[in-house]
Amino acid sequence: MKELFGTGVALITPFDEHGEIDFKALKRLLVHTAKSVDYYVVMGTTGESTTLSKEEKRSVLKFVLENNPKKLPIVYGIGGNNTQSVLDEIKSTDLTGVTALLSVSPYYNKPPQEGIFQHFKALAKASPLPVILYNVPGRTGSNISAQTTLRLASIKNIIGIKEASGNLEQCMKIIKEKPKDFMLISGDDMLTLSIYAIGGVGVISVLANALPQVFRKIKEHFHAGKLSQAQTDQFRIIDINGSMYEEGNPVGVKYVLSLIGVCGYHVRLPLVAPSLGLQNRIEELYKKI
Image (cartoon, rainbow, N blue to C red; front, top):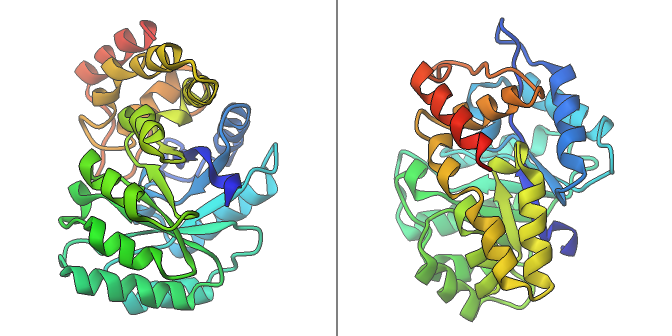
């Protein structure tokens, strides 16, 4: 799965002022990011997947497949907290042209570690594609422990984890004990360089929607042994990163994309457009990058 090394961009879903999918803007986004990212992630949290219908999700996937400027690999998000529903969605979705699935740990019902293990074991068995786990305790209310990740890593069809726990010690435990080909991917833009440094393979990024070149440079400089330059690249986004999530994701990054003419900043309820104060802060911070 070396085609999934480097930067995956967690694509936003552009909407028009009426809340409908703006496919013209989506095409501009694909062109904008294609020069610097290594693969696309479709229907992750950043894509506002929870507010899109099944038909809309499939239409977005179809559009990305058909308008992929550099024919980059595509990772598609299918996850949830009802295991059977996730299995049904995997079975009913045409995954032709997709490289792997990204599946979030069950949220809200807070399963124990054994429940998390059995959930992903069932998904891996049912999936025709390799599965990447997604650990994001800040959203799910529970953590996939390093021990559970390593148990799941022994299942042939589970190829990696997007780690957004922010816990570097946990990430290091996974790296230390994992099978050779199991991928640890950063789920936190600000830990991109840190994850590379401990043996991870890259990042699935929010800010790469707007600033894909920054993440390309981090990767290139790190692998060229130019650590100080990679640090400089990483530090370029340190000030703006927090404002991306201040009023919910992808509110912040959509506003940055509006500043550079890629798409509008419309989101779907329960998210709302950025406040005037946040808009002003983002504009000032973006000028400094």
